[in-house]
Image (cartoon, rainbow, N blue to C red; front, side, top):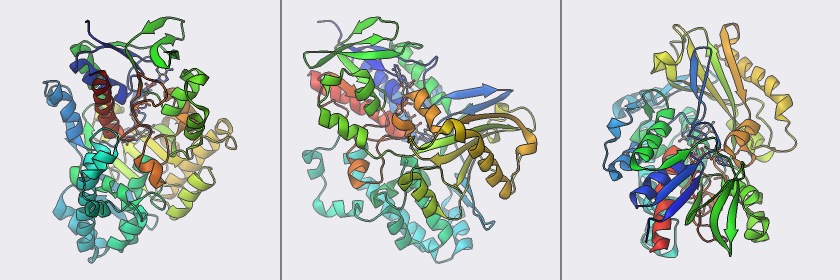
Amino acid sequence: MGARSAIIIGAGVGGLACAIRLRLHGYDVLVLEKNDRVGGKMYVHEADGFRWDTGPSVVTMRHVFEAVFRDAGRRMEDYLTLLPLDPLTRYFYPDGTIFDASPSTSQMAANIAALDERDVEGYFAFLAYAARIHRVTGPVFIYDKPPTPASFARVPVTEWLAADPFRTMQQAINHHVRSPYLRQLLGRFATYVGGSPFAAPATLNVIAHVELMGGVWYPQGGIYQIAAAFARLARELGVTIQTNTPIQQIIVENGRAAGVVTAAGDRCRADVIVSNLDVTTTVERLLPSQAVPHRQRQRLVNYAPSCSGFILMLGVKRAFPQLAHHNLFFSEDYPAEFRAIFDDLVPAARPSVYVSITAKTDPNHAPPDSENWFVLVNAPARAPHVDWSAQARPYADHVLALLAERGFDLRPYLAHETIWTPADLEANSGAWRGALYGPSANSRFTAFLRPRNRSRAVKGLYFVGGTTHPGGGVPMVTLSGKVAADCIVEDQR
Ligand SMILES: Cc1cc2nc3c(=O)[nH]c(=O)nc-3n(C[C@H](O)[C@H](O)[C@H](O)COP(=O)(O)OP(=O)(O)OC[C@H]3O[C@@H](n4cnc5c(N)ncnc54)[C@H](O)[C@@H]3O)c2cc1C
C-alpha cells in the first residue's frame, strides 16, 4: 500500500505544524493556501521603509516551538532565534504610573513593592496558584488530544478543585493582590484568548503562569520568522505548499471527506482533509449544506465570539526612548471597556491601547530615527450594527487622540498609516466575524470544550488551528497541529 495522503486547507501556523507532523508519520502532504504567502494571521506588512508583523506579537511557551523541531530531528536554533524580552511588557496607567513586568524574580518583587509592599507575597502566592492550574489542566486541556472521560479521570477529583473553574479570573486575582495596578495587569491575560477577566473562568489564570514564569520571546527578524521556519522545515521534509490556491469546496462522498475543489475548478483527492480555517467558516462556506446536521451548524454559528481587533500600523518619524518593545496603555475603566466589547458589541469609547515596536529589538524594521508602531485595540467581533467602512477613520483618529492624551502625540510624525478592522481580519484569514480566537472564553463551556479536531459529521475531515482544541494563540495553535495529526494517525490504525 502506498503512503496515505492528506490535503491541508490553509497554511496558518496550525496548518503548517500539522503538515510537519503528518509528514513525519509518512503521509504525502499537500497544503493549499489562498494567500500569496504562508502564515495566515501571522503576516507581514511592508511600506515606506517600515515593516510590521500584522497579527501576533507576544510569543510565549518557547518549549512548544522547540518540540516541533526536535520531533523532526532538528535544532530550533538552526531555523529560529528566540530572544528573551525584558521588560516583558511596559504598562502605562492613566494616573502616570509606569510598571515594568520583568522576567527577573527579584526585579519583579522590587517593582511590585513600589506599588504595594503587601502584594509581593500575594503575587508569588498567585504565581504558585497559577502554576498549580497549569500542572493540573495541562495534561488534559493543553498538551493532549481533546478531553475524554478517561483523560479527566487521570486527575484525582480533589486536584480538579485547583483548576478553580467556578470563580472569574478577576475574582481570583483580587483574592491574591490588592494593588489596582497589579489587578488590572493580571486581568489583562484574559485578552490573550479574546476574553474578559470579569467573565472568563479563573482557570485561565494559567496564562499568567505561562508568560510571567516562562517569559516572552521575540523571534529575531520578526514574528513572521515562526511561519517562515515552519514552512522551511515542512518543505525540507517533503511537504508541498501551494500558495494563491483558494479552496471553494470540500468534496464529501458517502459521508466522508474525499477531496477539495479549488476556486479555479481543479479537483484534488486525498485520504484525509484537514481544515486550518475557522471551524464555523469551514462548515458554513466549504462543506455542502447537508453534510452537517442543522443543529450542529446552528450551535457553531450561535457561539458567542471571542473579541476581534482594531489595528493601526504606523510609520513614525521619531523615536520614543520611554517605550519598550511591548507597551500597554491601560484605560481608566476596564470593566466598561469589556462591557462595550462583549455586551454591547461596539468599539469601546476609551479603550486600552497596546503598542508593539519591533524596531526596538530589530532596528532595521524602520528607517533611522523612526519606529514601526503596531497598535492594537480590542474590538468586538463584527456585528451588523457596526459599519467599519464608515467607522475605521474616526476610530483611528480617536485612538491617536488617546495616545496623544497619554503624552505620545504621533500625528505630526506619521510617515505611514494602515488601518485594519475586524472586517479586514475576517477577509484576510477567514475568521468567522473577525473573532481572533473562535468561540469566546467567557463561558466555562466554550473556554474548555472547544470544537474537536475530528469532525463529528464528516469522516476523514479534521480541524486544526485557533478555533479548535486546545485553543487560540500561536503556541496553542502549534500544539493543535500535533493533536490533529495524532488524531488522524490514531484513526488510520
Ligand atoms: C491582531 C492579532 C493579534 C494577535 N496577537 C497574538 C499574540 O500576541 N500572541 C499569540 O500567541 N497569538 C496572537 N494572535 C492569535 C494568533 O495569531 C492565532 O491564534 C494563530 O496565528 C492562528 O493560526 P491558525 O493556524 O488558527 O490559522 P490562521 O492564521 O487563521 O490561518 C488560516 C489560513 O487559512 C487560509 N485560508 C482561509 N480561507 C481559505 C480557503 N478558502 N482556501 C485556502 N486557504 C484559506 C488563510 O489565508 C490562512 O492562511 C493574534 C491574532 C491577531 C489577528
